[in-house]
Image 1 (spheres, rainbow, N blue to C red):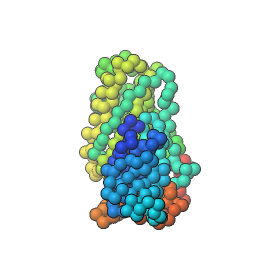
Image 2: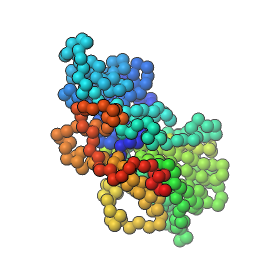
Image 3: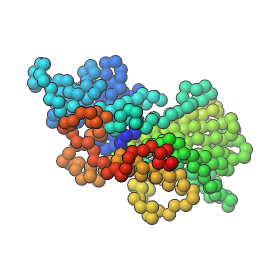
Image 4: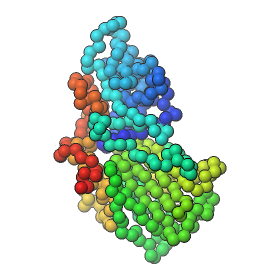
Length: 379
């Protein structure tokens, strides 16, 4: 799991002036809207005696601890009230919690979980189709008992479709089947590919008449460790562009927030069938990914036999190594070894300016060089 990226915290509609309890990157968080409706995401542990702030109350622009009434500002995580000290008491400088930058976009609330200053942060994945005419939208959210990086690799995999998704492939029934040589698309913070393949006629009523002649163009790519895009071009006039934003709960569980745009059958009556189709496809992937062993990607490439169709996955793993070398990867083993003795917080940008934090930042694997973007790594 990696710090210093944007992650989806919740749906915009979910977030109110009542605290929302979250777990992301193995750490407990609290989210809420303040008196002006602004979203806030903070570390969940009260620095007084370890109570869960998410089980307290929102008071104006603050979150109030349910144990002793300490109040923390949503804007910066600073404690502004300790009732037991009396009115106008001096608040200890160490009475503060991590507060994470937020963005509200695409009907989601995102939190930047890391300590990079704003100018150095990887951007949120862009959705060019958002708000554009000629595109209908289908949304889908689900939760898997799997490692999110394993799921990312599944999205990038151009060879799995033939066997995992019956409506998209011949299930190995064509003797002339193969994955063509792949051309990797290099983007800032990600890699991907597009390729053309022949698929069977699509039987479902929602897709009838959509497929064109001459094969279907499709491909996928990542943006950071937890965002991904998939393009399905059934014909020149029928396209589906899909975007997924994954929320790593911990090493073995994640939520996925999925948005699909389509240029065909734009009438609202088709939204239901398209949703059902998307859920069915996701379920086909989930069944396979949740059974992968080991649950985490093997640490050594010698433990798997990779072939040319795995080129994009290999590049994705190289990017992960780059971000690990930057010192952004959480040392999960150390974190787990101390779970009964210590609580950790994802480091926020304020830790670069302020000293004296009661809760330690999550342990990270050691950096191996100067931080760089994925494009710089490729060059």
